[in-house]
Length: 306
Image (tube, rainbow, N blue to C red; front, top):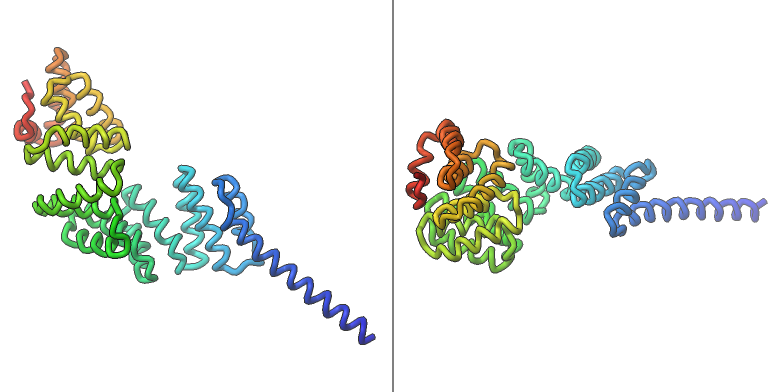
């Protein structure tokens, strides 16, 4: 009887060991899968595995969320990040991912608590970056500079943080500081549309290095055709150069993203009128409905409107 009891004990221990091995392998498959489709499949299995701890399942959800986000399904990604936070409110990847998507969709008030919680958990680099971007959109430029400084203390060559700080400095009229930051950002990542577009506007407003401004505008539009600032800066420069058809194309690209943008509407109207399409006046009048001073702004930018 004693031998039988020992054998059963060994079997029981072996079964527990197998279960633990299965638990680990389910989580590991989620974490080690490389292709997005394989990762989503593996992490789905792990997220649904009730034998895993809440923390393990939370990681599975946030890892699947990253894969969904990378694949372009931000709705599914946001849902996964939310599920991850419900299981473990201290999952930094889920908090940062949630903040990143909410920021991109303009939900600033919902994004801020997530990134501030991530900062408390010492996941500071990207969280400070997102917080700075939130503050720029709110017009809190001094606070944004502080946040970008914190992000840069963790990642000194972050092109996105440098470009964000440049934009905040530009809005505070620290033009030399903004120029230095844009230059550093572009050296770190020459394809960052935000940096290229920002430096384009800086040079255009200051009437300096206009050839470089045009190169930056073209680079921004190529890197990200939906970057409105890049398309607008390019359109203004094209108007100044008498390239009516090209300017119209640039402003229409901006309007495809922001249909009521007054600079894009007025610019398209100027391009249409200068190329012989009198109906361009309708665009210009609609732009004035959004911004009564839009004509003076184009005059300051060196554009002949008639």
